Amino acid sequence: MQYFVVMIDYGGREAVVDPEVTRREVVARVASGEYRNISFIHEIVDHAVDDVTEAILAEAAVPDIAAPETDPRSSRFDHVRDLRKHETV
Picture 1 (cartoon, rainbow, N blue to C red):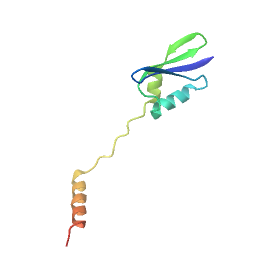
Picture 2: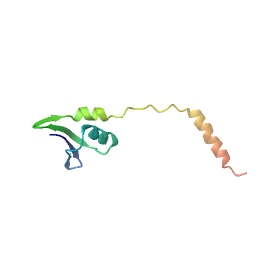
Picture 3: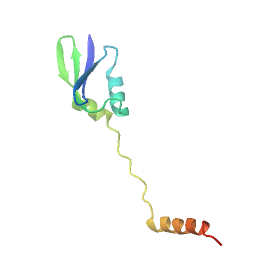
Picture 4: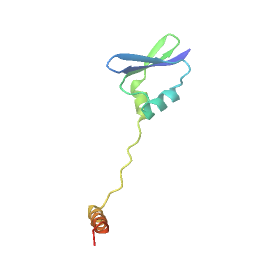
């Protein structure tokens, strides 16, 4: 039998244990933010316990996507144009 124990710290600790949850589902829940403040994640296989916290957190890491560079000068022109639209004539 294989299952995962996800220990979450909410100020007090709570263990999430569901024998039907696969590794892929645990990774998906960590990536989505469903599991937050994780103390540790253990994989239980038969009578052996393996700490897989770092591996699952690494799998669940969302790659950083650089924001497109903005031109502050064009933003300023847009702001001035918007102010002119709302001027009273």
